[in-house]
Amino acid sequence: MTRTTLRPVSRHRRWRSSLAAVSAAALLAACGGGGDDEEASAGGDSGGGGEVEGEVQDVTFLNILPLESLTFTPELVASSCGYFEDHGLNVTFETTQGSAQAIQTVIAGGALITRVGDMETMVATGEREAPLLNVGQINKTGTIRFVSDKSDPLESAADIEGRLMGTPSEGGTSELIIKVAASSAGIDPADVQTQVVGLAPGVYDLVKSGRIGGYVVSLDTAVALQRQQPDAVIYAPSDDVESGGQVYITSQDQADDEETQKQLRSYLAAIKDAVLFVEEDEANGFAETIKCLADYDIPTLKDAEVGKAALTEYVESWTAAGDDQIARTVPEQWQTVYEEMSGAGFVPEDLDPDDWYTNDFAPGS
Image (cartoon, rainbow, N blue to C red; front, side, top):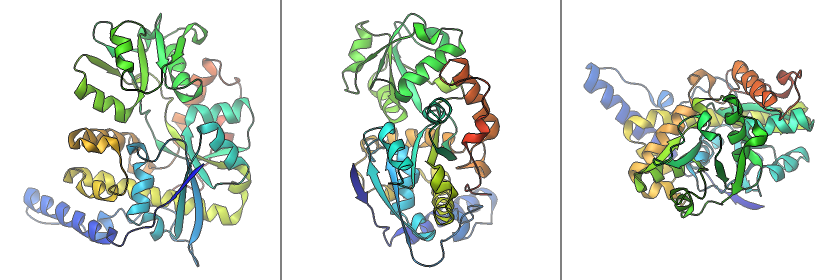
């Protein structure tokens, strides 16, 4: 695993003040008065958590993909701009070889927390009875996208039928979301054909040539591809299914331990603060957020318009259930994901998915 420790920089409080000033100016221009104080602009009231008393706590977060992606904006902003520090945490990031390794490391107590797909979590806990617990949901809508060409567009779950779909790797979230989406349209998941095509830029040529009928990409890639390939058709499976979000998981042992319980509360509170910061910064063109991300070489940010468009979609996903539900699992949605997964045959029926999550450590609890 690759380990990265990013120390919070001293500039973060000045950036928060700058964002508050911009927001206040906008309000004055629109309403002729008013304005929020610095604490409100920073998203300081997380609704839960708070600083860990005493010494700063060292914790490890396992990222299943390279950090240089906007998908990890909440983590990177919380680290670079001081929200983890505010809540008494020093967070080290370790990159794992996918979700399977991350899950095993968390179960073994080698890390406090990781972030994986809700579908993978369902399989691990419901099918394999892994001692894991979902402690909070960050993406309320899926950020995976399917790419096809306008000559044979994939625009709904029903259009998956008869296609050979490309995936970045075998198994995992990409393959699961294709089959769960297909199942929602009455297509037998066993009839869905997939092929590993990787993530190289030339994969779109396989679609244009008809060798594959579509392929799976991240939200970042989809936004960039739409600018580069006018004929590309982008479909969001979250238009048809609830599955595809991302959740924070820890081991059952750590969820039961009083010291790590405090760390979990602090971690999720810092994440909520970071999300609120980015959400407010949208009115400022994400200028302060991009400063927070400056220590990372994030490809999507090399094109300013692509970066802003992607951040807008991420904000929509993080806040889809309302600001009061940031980093919390919505019970009704979790139940629906279970029904989609069990209906597609990936987890047994007649189980209680409420046993696999808790909001006890999430902001607002």
